[in-house]
Image (cartoon, rainbow, N blue to C red; front, side):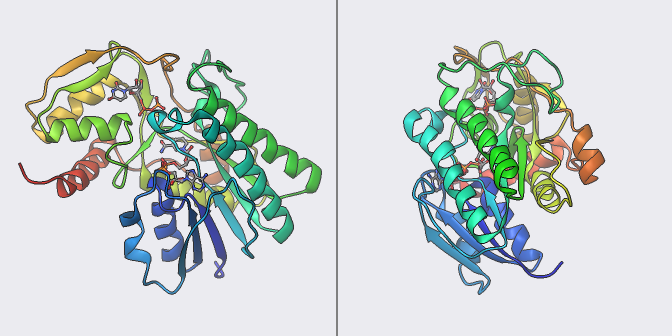
Length: 314
Ligand code: NAD
Ligand code: UDP
């Protein structure tokens, strides 16, 4: 593939930093824009001396124009703890941010992929979730700032494609985990792994019978690249691992893999916490020839090794 100049917004975050790595490995030039709201500088520190990598601080709520060929628009807090801290700002980021990037894509003629989410399906009545399903989202609950923000981002994206012919892609990302997740972002995998490594109680919200389907980060990033490079716009595409398990099973697996002495403790279930979530990835298999390759055991082991290396020895 010829070298392209590519903007990654939210590029110093968990997914963004892995995407920057991948694009550089493929020989491209990468411009990473991030306001460092939930970013970790160490995620991209190893790239700072690479002449094909450029990092700049920018809030996507402000308009920008940079001459690039492609845009991966990831900037947005992703963990419920972070996106609920300042809900208005989350909506601003999801809506104004996407609008600004679409304007830029239109102006410079770039292709653009947005990072949408399985949250557009809300607490789903259809299972597994196919792209045709419209979802069951509470528009005024505590998750609404994120869920509705991302739904609006999708609406904006398809509108730019229809009205202006902007070349867009929509990735509906299901729970993804791996090295470089933020220690304090409150998501389940990072919480459980850190609690297990510290032999602290593992905090299960509710009874732990809600399900999620966990995708390892390298699989997801491969899906991003394939999606942006499709010939035609395939509409929204689910990217995730269809291997579904309960949160209690996840906790037990992490205790076993870490050899932890942690016990399970049960805490109240957050409002509107989806009861189950599993992607139908038929469309991604068919159109992108993509499916996850990393098993949950292998992916968790990489994640555990990462957090073990970042934890002070006890
Ligand atoms: P993350 O919090 O690690 O990364 C988000 C990045 O965006 C951070 O670097 C943050 O500083 C930056 N950011 C936030 N607001 C910004 C703003 N206004 N301007 C510029 N930068 C800003 O989270 P992540 O898991 O890497 O998520 C990346 C994207 O993928 C998000 O859009 C998220 O909604 C989406 N997503 C992630 C998952 C997942 O499981 N990881 C699932 C569904 C969707
Ligand atoms: N969860 C949990 N304990 C934790 C963190 C999360 O039981 O310490 C649960 C949470 O209630 C949800 C699931 O794990 O049912 C996934 O949570 P996460 O915040 O990772 O992502 P979500 O899919 O809810 O956006």
